[in-house]
Length: 224
Ligand code: CA
Image 1 (cartoon, rainbow, N blue to C red):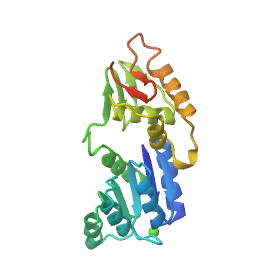
Image 2: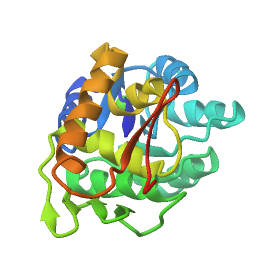
Image 3: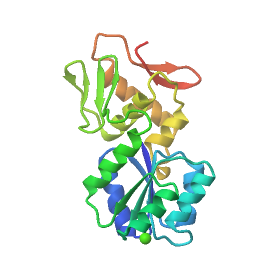
Image 4: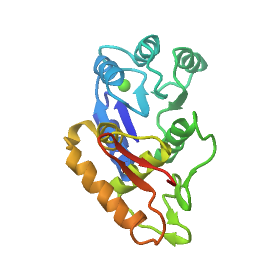
């Protein structure tokens, strides 16, 4: 899952990025509102963390402009103020949720998880394909009763495939959702990571494989 942080306080932005990367998210940062709007309307993000007070275009305006341009990525608005009018203004501008600074990282994480799962899964944090289960909260992955240990990127890749169960995802889509903008990832890298995942999720089990290559298109995870 890929997240955009639009926050002009570098220290806060960097510390959120570090925290989220440890939780397997791909993260891009920008420090001004206009650039935030440009990135959010051209790149494929799963969540945007948007500061209220920003240079060049303030957070409320970024939010409003994105919604007017039909960009419906979930937005978590950050603000230093805790006044009711600000909350109402933010939500009216199209933000999905609201967090007042200073906040605990754990709370930010909980809100992000809620925003990512909101459209499809509601409160279900376990993704399942056949007997493979991935828990997006505890980070546990199991096939049957066997625990599988994955690296951060492997986990992120598997999560992305499982959120798109039965659908073909292209290498480009995978790169966009699993790696950040600066990572400069080539399609070969995706192939390599699919290989690592197969070695952990499919090969050790004497069962039909779950990760499928769809020649010329990409990959999908499904029972058949
Ligand atoms: Ca600010």
